Length: 270
Image (cartoon, rainbow, N blue to C red; front, side):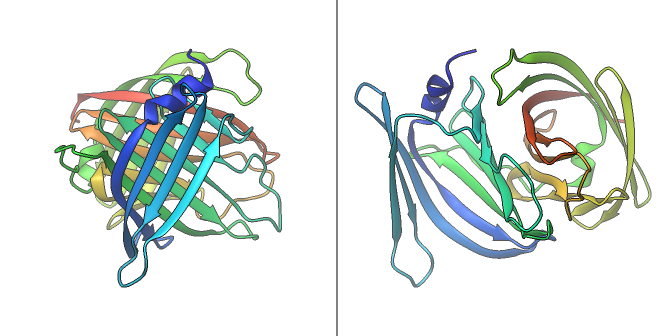
């Protein structure tokens, strides 16, 4: 892999889009136009990041950041995909993370936030394209887009800098009425069942997947349970048969343990 800093440089440029604030059930509450620019300084040894938000009927807000190193709460992949956020879940502390995917001149980012009781309080979906890009947004994700067999390549990286792991995955998804059956196989098979409720999938384990604009999906607990491992995930349907997922995993002690990027293709529609 490249150095973490070189991975960050994959995000250079001015990214135009919007910050869409969502309720825990996926209802759109606010959509704020945005421009986020990354400029390399000192022969790309320093990054200047400028975030401009233009809320309706309000002055434009601007935040300028300059940094030359990355925090322990951040990891990136070679293509620029990244996650930053809490490294430890603990009672009575706010908790959350950002997960970002990149595909050519498009970026998709998702922020998932939880209150001090571990309950999901809201999400922010950030859809961006490089300034001047004509690439169109994907349609909102639908349940039927997910049905079929997906075969993928996954890479897992770790905050303790141990060597990355790479492996293949098989995900089979089928629908029966208002139930969705999902079988994930990456050396061992795990089957889960979800109840379909409009644009959300509710699992018995308390996990919720929201189907969002631009082919996006959010996967996280509705409420984080103590002494239970959990994941925070964003998915992005780039083409009808091509999807990426970024998964931030936490142990049963609430400790951030890994970040996984999965690129999967649909090989069967049933």
